Image (cartoon, rainbow, N blue to C red):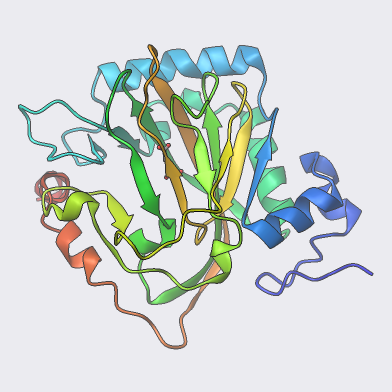
Length: 279
Ligand SMILES: O=C(O)CCC(=O)C(=O)O
């Protein structure tokens, strides 16, 4: 008997809902059970090479820096300090050609297979770990960044533009963690200048973590509540990740939580640049 995804109402195991995505019914069931999925091949080697050229240019040009879309996720983000974990929000705003129609169609099929036929693709970002860099992306849940006034049904598709290994910072997940609440977070290192968030140290048991190495153009997909992490890049090359989101409609939360850590984010150098650019 087909099972209905309670959060979306979609018949997620019906073959017609996932045929275009290339996912099997087992893949879909595993995603909902574990909160993540690793796929060895989502975009072609040629497409990876084409995207990588655009990606490297965006970081070299510091695209989006002036309006707060490009910043250091893990460091103080001051003009004279080298970024530990450079991130660009909405890279497709600065280089729309990074996303070809074929890739959007592929991503949309994955999103709809997992979240239901009305789900949409939207919201991309890029995290570029420099070689021999000590910055990890600490354990966190994506929803900790979002407004707790809503209940979400969202995922992220994480695509490495070179091989992703444990050594250079592939994705790691805590299976089943998407079924819990949003855990207490703080700014990384409890430093008020840092935009990035981490689960408060000691709150999460990471002994069951699963690392997901991937070839270039593979992808991991994770629920917006799944606790995840990437290690520091100890390789000789950049670790380039292009990430694109998908979601079904959010609904107002019945009993909204309060996320005190979001207040701190409003005072970071990144948030100040974003505010000034709008004045
Ligand atoms: O690429 C990384 O280092 C982390 C990515 C991440 O946290 C995400 O895609 O939600």
